[in-house]
Image 1 (tube, rainbow, N blue to C red):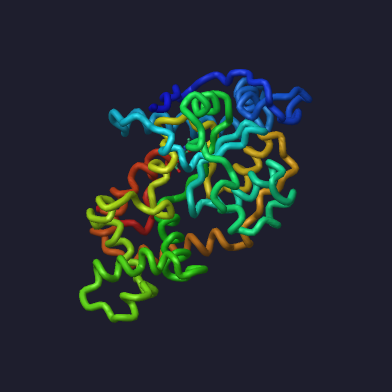
Image 2 (cartoon, rainbow, N blue to C red):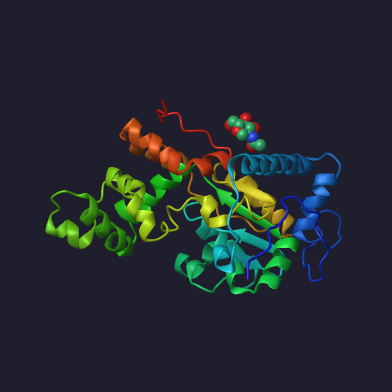
Length: 323
Ligand SMILES: *[C@@H]1O[C@H](CO)[C@@H](O)[C@H](O)[C@H]1NC(C)=O
């Protein structure tokens, strides 16, 4: 059965099992109610932050109505990336390469299903299937109840930087060989004119240009959806179909994560900080990789990722030559 389309602005409804602590006033409020209170409440530093998040939501809604046409109904399987925390009333749609390992760690710590310090949870454990329930595991009525009552959030990142990060972590300098074997060999076989046998067997030396050509090759998405590491955030999280209350950004990760954790009644929980300098280094790497890409390919890639740029208010990076 299809899942209901949620109206994009909706007053939160009360629900019984909210465990949130009294972050604002000692009253027990759900994260969604807390956000709603902030939107109505008096001026404060927190209210200013809430106002900024309201502007992001408004921008997303406007961009959705401007740029999306009639869309198919969603089924539960479309919600595979939306993770559920019933105890706190949270829905988190994870986008790989946007601090999603750390968010999974934090949600495990929050739920009491792991060590209290998120940093103590190994990455493979955070990603283990089933550790955190997904909305797709529920029936339509249960899905709709959670969509109505829970605070839904996602984190996004400048699309080209995310793409550069996916290339580096999965193909150029991976932790394991799985992605090279699965995707690297496929890319070499399909796109390299005279591949060496070793490259065909291992897929270990895919160049950035080859990776981009693979993404732009119409056969790629005809065969199967993009892998989640390079799939567009909007295709993973359906932000024009579901109501997201907080749109966090990788560029302001610490502040946005603290905002969500405050709403969840866990302001003491520290979101793991990236090593100093890591975000700037990632940005510089993306720029180096994309500088060598021809304007023709840059434009086609921008078109491919256009919706993520538009919906999440990213402008084309300065190094992109769109005309
Ligand atoms: C969108 O981006 C522009 C340019 O970076 C910025 O000035 C504006 O405040 C942003 N809007 C929202 C709602 O974040």
